[in-house]
Length: 533
Image (cartoon, rainbow, N blue to C red):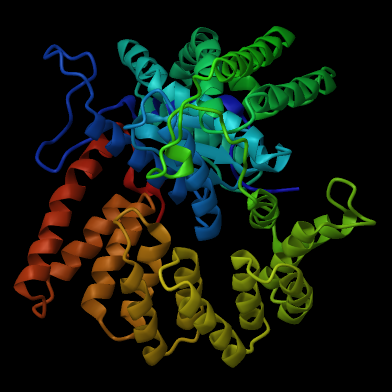
């Protein structure tokens, strides 16, 4: 199974997610944001929440926990935003991201940032079950549970950033990653650990029922099966029974304890919602749909219980990307997933092909994907994989032909463009790098798009645009949780006399934004070397 260095202690992730950024983040204009509960009585603003959540994601990425994959990101974001649009606060912005760890877990942090472990999706039997867990986490955001936990931690005067990061590094070492935490850092966080644990227990006991209730409503309004959350809970409860002999329970069970009562209440809520809907329909009062809105944004009416057809493909893609190695993924498929040895599904064949691609066995992958392409001629995920199979087989002309056909058919598709740009840059050729730049500029990318920024930086570098390459590599460092590295790169860039007025102004502005963040990390006790190199 997966040898990921992600912490095995479920509480570590829950505490980190809910409490890590209760220490004050920073703005470009000030040294630090107001303390929660400060004498000035200023409360955290939505913009500050978003900043906290964003930098949490950066730090997790720096620790190699985040799984950045355009196809999976698109699938998860589509599902998540469908739920968010039907939540109690549809105006709340959400960012959904994946973590490569195979422990069963999910969490919400400040700013509507919601993380989901690969293990949770691999355990789920349907997309509705994944949506059920996400709707539960969305409810922790809409009901302000995360904010309340942060406020309680501030009252305890806990140096949350230092403690939580220290716990993650310590757990990472315990998980067998081979990296050891600094002894002083680990010692500094130990005195706060017990109190943080109790706070997380209090958070769980007081808020889980409310998140269940609101989450099931969100799930139902979004058109998913409202029983799905109870179905997932029941599976987790069976894991609890199986682990009664002392084995380690999944992370999700520690931060979301199961019981027969909780499962029964979840099923009862789902039943009542269906019954109420049936009564309204019988009375002729069903809510009409709005033809101008997408399905996920429709007002509550008779839910259309449809899930994405991409779930089974996403699950197998995630199985490969979360495996310890491509070879381990191949072995996993050969041994059989869910007992499919005698009759593998098309999705399983797709997963095996991806494992072959990652293992540079392009011809083996292409043989599988060619057959799948005949059965699913318009399936984008298979088409991208076929181009990547040619790439892995070292057939650049065939790969480029397939990618060109894809961009002609899907000119603005992010996954297609990023996959093609990655191939072009692998050729290590200035002309191909210029083509990659053209494609990347076509789709654009916001400042938080890590994969886009990384590819764009390399494209600038290979095409000889060293100034823009240096600027973009600094953005990559920032998104990777290395703010001091980003400042250093930009400061060195300012010494270059070839910078024009506009680029110099842009670089100076970014340094001004990054400096307060660096100062805040140091104030919290996070040393620059602990952020990685």
